[in-house]
Length: 89
Image (cartoon, rainbow, N blue to C red; front, top):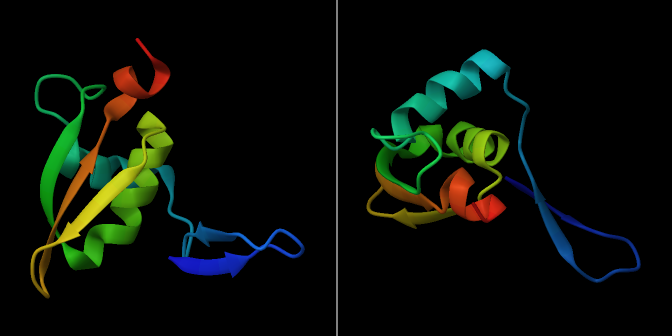
């Protein structure tokens, strides 16, 4: 992610380093989505090199904020509320 400071606002906004195709996000989301229903909350262990695309995919498909817990230099845990909780269903 790239941090951008908004002019005159004094707040920062995190923007993705790059944009991913729908196909790339489909693949990334398939690694982290809940096995019972894709709209459920999710928790998954992923390689750190997938963090950016997974974050974008989760936001795209669920509207959820992604919480990342680095575990070591190779792996992180990602968690998100999922679509149902995000929209209030």
